[in-house]
Length: 187
Image (cartoon, rainbow, N blue to C red; front, top):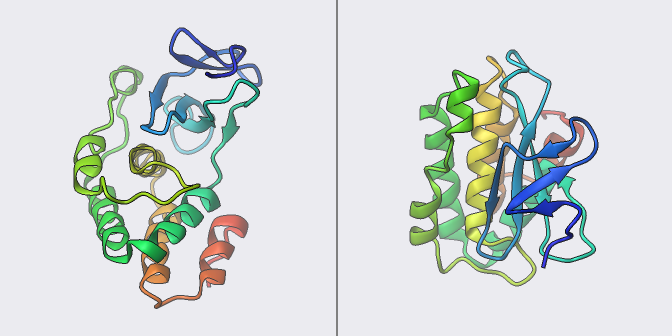
């Protein structure tokens, strides 16, 4: 089901950067594998991580998940499930405010998603063909909240959550949001 070069014994693997298995590999309901790999940025490069995605296809290769992909995914879902997507974004805005970055490598090694079950239960009806499963979105948003919290003063991911909500509600032009997540420009 997965490319055997990049998925072995239940773990995603990378061959660029430090070769080896992911710190964690999570699998969404749609079969998408989401891997957490060692990063090197921020205030604590030792605790930094990168999020890679591997589609359940034999020819697929892992790729870093750009922020514009989860944003567009939620904008598409928001056209069909506006209220639910706004509630989901509110949920992660609260999670963001209350979560703490990893304090040690051991804590990061023991990590397991804490929002996944509740999000899958509350938003199980949110499904749009061609988009990620709601569980996949949950894992990604939780990981990005934790990752941004590693760097004091960082705020672009939180701002992207807020602006995505505003776009779904018709309160912000989507071009502003895409400039934020693609070009890292706030206006």
